[in-house]
Image (cartoon, rainbow, N blue to C red; front, side, top):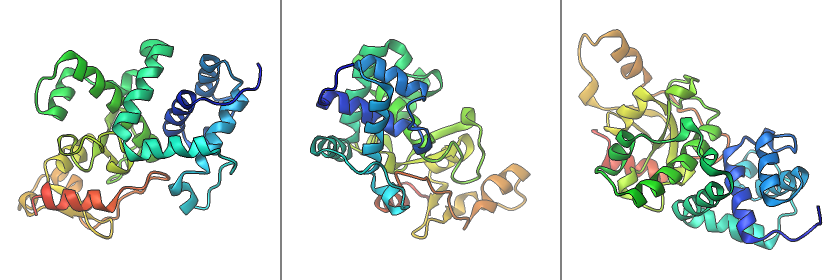
Length: 259
């Protein structure tokens, strides 16, 4: 395949994929890298190298002294900043392009949304065009957050992907720009996601779990005690990249938590 400069659209697709796969799997034998390379008419090695270029721009990896290749281009940096400034738009645009290239395979079954999910997130039944946008944005967000937390609940450590949810810290309805921002996400099991969403649990300034007085009842059954009461004060499990935004936690404490 002839060597040629990367276009902005190609870089958007590469960064979309970078967000969805672990740092340790950015190699040319990864099936997802091979698939993207075929769609872009590039070699898997060139795509793998580009993902490692993006890793060199990732501030959360720099904080952990993990380095990419370190020769990212000016355009690489522009595309990274484009995602960082409006994750919702960047996620939708790149996911939409992926669907054009790959069809429905671009959205994994476990990352898709039911009509019930859509209504719960948006607070209403949405028209078809908006459903498509929500579906694509959320598929990107879920995969990125779960990969960042290595598919473990940040509160209890459960590691069954079928029971895990990419929870928004600042709720979906409160900020359009933060809907796909992985720094506004935390991986929680179904129980802790629901408790977090309803304000029964939150996260303190030292990244410790806060428990609302509303759930502190006497003679609570075992699941209530273990799942809610006994997690109080426990430090949350941290992601290896896309560290959660302290400002998002503050918003949750002030606007959602039933202190």
